[in-house]
Image 1 (cartoon, rainbow, N blue to C red):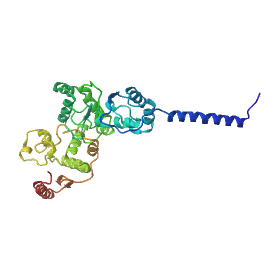
Image 2: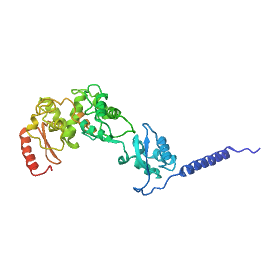
Image 3: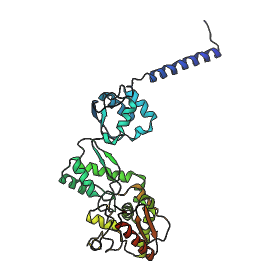
Image 4: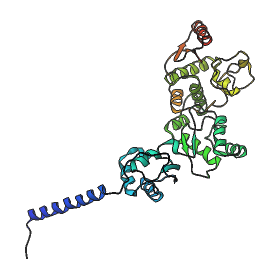
Length: 339
C-alpha cells in the first residue's frame, strides 16, 4: 500500500481545490446570456409583474420565464454585482424579449417602461394627485373613498403633506386606498419623515410639515433653510407670515409670481395675509430637502425675502430694504424677467 507524505497530500488538495475553482469559474462564465444589441421599436415586448419583496433570484426567474433573458443565472449574477438592481420597483415593467441581462436591468430601471407608474412631485397638492389617480383609471368616488379611509399619523387631520414625493409603481388591480396608503407609509418609513414625526420642541410634527410645505413652495432649494428661518422669526414676533404660496394654494393656481391686493383679502384660514400663525394643514407634499430645512433653519434675523429676478432671492430684516427690493422686483416683472 502506497502512503502519501503530508507534503504530497497538501499538493493533491491544492490541485483538487484549484480544479474545483476552475470548474466553478468556467461554469459561471458559461452562463447563457444574449449579446448586447441595438433595441428597435419593432422588437417584441412583454410586460412582467415584479411582486413586492422580490429578490434578485426571484426577478431573474421571472425574466427567464418571460423570455427576456437567456438564463436566470445571467441576470442573477448581474444583480449580485450591480447595486442598481436594489432599486427595481415592484409592479409592471415593459421589457424587450431576448436581450442581455444588463439591458434587462436598464429597462427595469427606466420609468418610461413602467405602465402603472404614479409620480408624486415635490410640492404637489393632493388635488393634483387626484388628477393622476383619475388618469390611472380610478373614479371620483373611488378616489374620494380612498382619501377618507387612509390612516394618517397621530396629530394629523388629513393626508395633505404626507404623500411622500417619489415614483410609485403598483401591480395591476391595486385599489386607490392601497396606493394612497403606500405614499403615507413611505413618508413614515423615510428617515426624514421619522425625524419630523418624532421631533420635540416648540412645534408639533404637523406644524413642522406645514412649514416644510411653505418652504417647498416659496424658495429654490438653495434658499430653503433661509425661508425656514424667516417663517420661524415671523412666528416668534407674532407677525403674519404673508406668504403668497398659501393664497395660491387656496386659489389653486401655480406659476403666478404676482399676487393682487384682492387675493390677499380672500376669506380663508389658509390666507396668511389675513390670519396669523401657520395654515391649518400643509399646503402641499414637501420633499426631503424642504423637510430638512424646516427642522434645521439657517441662522439669521431675516423677516423678509423677495425674488427680484429669477435666481436672485434676497433676505433682510429691514422693511425699508424690502420695499426697495420690491420696487426692483416690480421693474423686472414689468420688463418680462419672469415670463
